[in-house]
Length: 176
Ligand code: IMP
Ligand code: MG
Image (cartoon, rainbow, N blue to C red; front, side):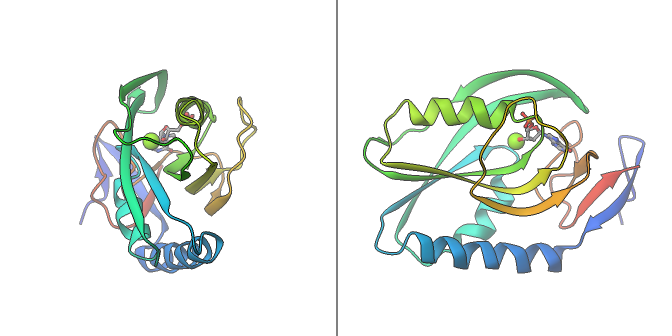
């Protein structure tokens, strides 16, 4: 069992069973909200890949999936500048777009990604984030679907990382 990452002790915050329950609720809500729509789901790499994989299997609609890759946290828990590494490959003009992100911290990443996508003129644009930190945000972001609200702690697991480690942990942990 993994109890530390890069020498930092980790403690369980949200168990995988609780995550699955929440993900399936989110999937149901999204399915209802977008019924009769042809949805495009865009994941923000790398952090959202596990959440997205689970979520899309709970969305009972015709969908297309794409990814956008940005880098923000360069080292461990330090924030860096946001950089667009790979843009989406499909045309978003006139489409209903749902952006899927692992977590909302300062809001910088989602603000950057939102602007990148909105500039492609989708018919509608919504955001789904698994985790929202309760702290005061530097950039105000409207999230349409939120899994969990947590205190301002650094988390790892279920796709999120500490210096690129721990993405494969099935549960979500906090760094002690
Ligand atoms: P923001 O730009 O500050 O909102 O940060 C969002 C991005 O930073 C997320 O997409 C995560 O990839 C990363 N991030 C922020 N907080 C954490 C954390 O507690 N653990 C792991 N990654 C984090
Ligand atoms: Mg991320």
